[in-house]
Length: 289
Ligand code: PAF
Image (cartoon, rainbow, N blue to C red; front, side, top):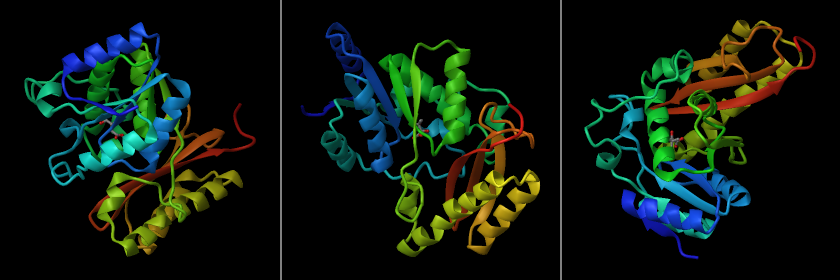
């Protein structure tokens, strides 16, 4: 079946109604476009769980800070439509800024997950997660999906969206899909497109560093601060300017206590003008139940 491109709320409501009358469950894959194999793995997962799959492509201005890359963020709609067609996606919704923010960004109602939004990436990107939660909430309301699929590369984003859905009793299942990586270990990201071939090789040091730190954690290291500062130094040694390396609890996303078993190592670092993020889950044996 050909991919249906939807640009208006009316068309969207009527397609949603059609799928509902056909008894088809809906899987939503929200994206900002410039699709790569990571996004397409979300489509595949959605197809395996739902009878209809709708992707959205919207570069959301509300989640970019004033000095960030909103203007230069890659917009590749024609290639994205081809990729979604090849992946067997049923439809794609491509709203405009005016549709999502009719009164302008300043006047828009915000959804904000307290405390956790200000940690890690939220520290250096104030307001970012409010922008993400707000737009995803609108996309949920407009599309009314049964399930929504997000990449776990953006671990903090996924955690916050899950909390938003639970706190606000939103009737949607959130599915986190594992990160897709280059052979070098570099996590796929639209921002990798800013990197030269040589920088892409260099950037693989981010995952290598996290893997090394994860190995130390699994082997019993429990001085988290020292481990994170060493990982930051290792990143500096490979040409990165680290934003942060932190160890959080998988249950609370708060900084982990030394006895905690289910951990997530989170990192963000700059390679020249490109900010990359990555994370790795670590299950320690021993410690608190
Ligand atoms: O992860 C992304 O691409 C974006 O943050 C999202 C979830 C599509 C919201 O704009």
